[in-house]
Structures are given as C-alpha cells and as structure tokens.
Image 1 (tube, rainbow, N blue to C red):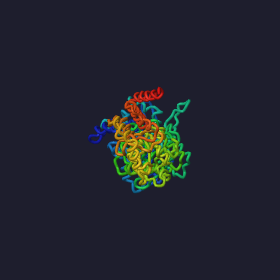
Image 2 (image 1 turned 90 degrees about the vertical axis):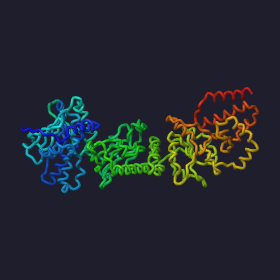
Image 3 (image 1 turned 30 degrees about the vertical axis):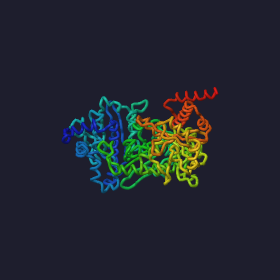
Image 4 (image 1 turned 60 degrees about the vertical axis):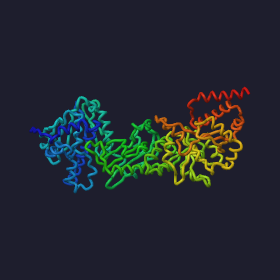
Length: 624
C-alpha cells in the first residue's frame, strides 16, 4: 500500500479549526452533511449511467450506516471519486464536487441541478467536530478495484492518501468518534438524527442491526424517502395530509385547514402549511417561541422557526417549505441574504392570509382558530402594514348584537347591520367581557339599538392604535367623551344648558369645588339611565386601558384626569342635590366618584377607603 502525505492548502489548519469549533452551532448536523453528500454521489451515478454509459445499473441506490466499537461508518454506492478528485474535493476547503460536476456535464444534464444537493467539501469537514480521525475509502465508477483510494486525516492540517482495494464503487466515510461525543455511537441517537434531518431524501437510508438470536446483521430502512409535499395535490387524500401533519407536530390536535402550493420557475419552492386547532403551551413567550415551519432544501431538513420566512404574528402556522433555489453559506445553517428570501416572505404571508380567509367561511372552525390564536393574529395590524386591510377583514369581535361572549362578528358584518344614518363603528374597551357588556357607557347605545363591539383583551387597546377605520368608516371608542355626538345623544345642547343653568348649576359648582384637580371637568349627560355618574376621557388623551397596559410593563405614566358626567335624572343625584350638610355632601360625592372609577378601571388605589365610605353612608340611612 503506497502512502503519501499531503498538506492542505495554505492556512487550511487555521480554517479547519474555525470550521470544526466555530462554524456549526449544532454538532449533530455532521450526519446530515454526510448523508447529503452520499445522496449527491448517488444522483451523479444515475446521471452518469443515463448520459454517458447507457448501461443499466441493477444495484439498489442506498446509503448504509453502521457502528462498530467507536467507529461510525456512512457508506453509499454512488459515483465515487478518483485519486485526483479526492485531492481536489477533500484537500481543498470549500471545493464543491457538485459544482465541478455540474460545470463539466451541465449541458447534458439539463435541469438536473435541482436534484443535486451536496457540497462534498465544507459539509464533509463537519465530521471533525465529532471525530479524532476520518477515513474516506472510495472507488470511482471510472476506476477498477485496485485503483480505489483511501484518504485519511485527523483534521490538523495534513492528510494521507494511499491505494486500497475496494470491491464496489462508492464511498465509505469512516469516523473515529471522540470520547466526548460517544452519544453518536448510540443507535437511537443516530436514528433520531436521520429522521430529523434526512427523513425525506430520495434514497433509502439503512442502519445495520444485529438480527435477534444470531450473529447475523440485517439492514433496516430508517427514513421515509417519500416526501408528501413533492406529490401532486390530486394524488393526496385528506387523510394523508392529516397524518403528515401529525408526524410534523406533537400534541397539537388536528389541522383546521391546510394549503399545498408549488411555485415553479427560477425561484422554485414548495410549501405545505397548516393552521392547527390547538396552541402550543409556550406560544406567548415572544423571546423563546419560534414558528413551526421547517425549512428543507431539496428534501433535506435545514432548520425551523426562521423569522425571515414567516411573520411573527403568524407564528402559529405549522408545516414545511422546500426550496430548490435557496442558497446557504458554507455552514449550511445560515441563510444568505438575498432577494429570494424577501420574495419568499411576502409570498408565504399571502398564502397564509388566503388560507385564513378561506377558513373564515366556516364559522365553527374559524371560531376555534380565533379563540386560540386571535390575540396573536391581532399583532399583525402593527407588524404588517402592507397587509393591514386583509388582516382587518379577518378580525373578530364580541358584540352587543349577539350578547354572547362566544359568538363573534367581523367588521364587514358590522357594516352590513349599521343603522341608517350611522357613520361610525363604535367599540368599548374594558378588562373583561362582563365589564364591557354591563358598562354604563353602553346604556344610550342599547337604548338607540346601536351595535357596539366589545373588546376586553390586553392587546386590544394597543391594536386599536393601528385600526382607525375600516373601508373609510371611522372606529371610535365610547369610553371617550368625544364619541357622544348629536346622532347618539338625544338631549339638545339648548336643553342641557337650560337644565344646567336652572336646576343643577349649583350642584356642578359644589362637585367641582370638592373634587378639584382630581377631575378634568364636571358636566351633565343624558346618556345614562341606571347609573348616576360615569367618567370618560377625551379622544386626544390616554385611555384607561392604555394606562394599565403601560403600567403593567413598568412604564411611569401620569394619572388620568377624567371628565365626570352626571345623570341629573337619577334618584341619587336628585337626593344629593338636596343635601345641605357640606360634610355629608362631600362623602356622597367621593362615593360616586370612587364608584365611577371602579366601574371604569375595575380597581381602586384604596378600596378600603371606598368600603368604609360606603358602610358609613349605608349606616346613616339605616339609623335614619
């Protein structure tokens, strides 16, 4: 056996050290790289027979993986390499055997480039992350048995090449696993890595297993090979789509809907995307949760949860994207910045929104989606300005029209039900459904039979910053005093002035004197029936819910000065207006003020004070 030692190209030792220790963030991908290279070699052999030899090859194209002691071997019966090709491909970092192959034979191969996935160069060197020594025993389809080549290196800047007979064409990559990487000598670990990254490659991957009760081994196929998304949609049943979904995810129920698309041309890719009916437990963790879309390149798994491919507000989507066009850097882990990435992002977003529009036609299923993911989807109004209209079409709200928390309406349906002459969409925001539906702000709207949207999620106040109108119709909050226009409030200004001047002008003055800077103003209103008072803010001022939102994230914000509105027809207001005792009058005013704050904010800074005040007033009535 003639051996000859070669030095890697200049500065290769330094580069190898970088690749082995820094370039890859996940050591297990070494097996993905070796399997991809084997697939590449098998593809090349098929092309070779087809285009240059015209001979049939009866051997089964496959990849075999075995473990002996501390040695892991990945073998294929692909095209193999000559001695010159070994030196060129393995002695030069980032030398792509695939690229060289296509350069030489591209004209005859036509559009076959999309089927060749390997880069027998940089990816191969990831094996040194887990190996003390690597051997490559290869025989080219062009060579005889005694022309076979053995390549050997410890990754320290040199390699040895010798001749060693090999009975069959193909390549064996033999890894002497490091002591600290012994987990890669575990059968279950290897099989899990194969299923994770290479489950759908075009060739069988077989693992050598000891046959029970004997010293004989059998080769068991590990991967599926048949990638569902590569089939024609016409040949896939609903059952197959659902089973594939369940193989992708765990504990996520069933899909509500799916979309299978293939885009052809220069930027070719296939997508199979699902909307689940169940939310992952950690989906609200913005810092850690990533979307469930897996990226494949020519059926080889690369990574999942890529923010550059799918918007964060659509992170509930599950599925796969398989690209024949996407280019990777030398680690195969970090996507290169390219126009295609941006185009893919826009295209996938449109596909998902169209899928949701289709799902919205099924009220039962869409309600399931909205309960699970509605609050996440609302984030899109801020994050995706270009699709804001389509997002607004898909929004759903509780409403006074149904008077049922579990029934929702769209903005489109609201418009179709608007009263004649109504020119605004009205909504109310509070802490929960019951606070909304029982709010004193609603009384005049219920009386006038005007529908009001009920919003009670933490995100709603923030969401409405970006939803000012829908189809040209302005959305206004009934929590704001400005929304009480003449089309809603029945009492004319002249009557308000007359009542204020003749009957309640002194009451207003006394209340203002007592509350002072606690309120912005005190005025009469006729929008109340069952409540004596209510507090509101102006449209240009911070709302109660925004105050709570900012406070909850640690922001220091000034207190809101509310406008106190008085229902002059309420029995309590009439009684209080008759009180001469200033001390008793003061207690009643604070009682009403705290009551209005409690209704508006669902909390008080000092609830004990309010309870004591209430008990004191009740006691006086009981004694009287």
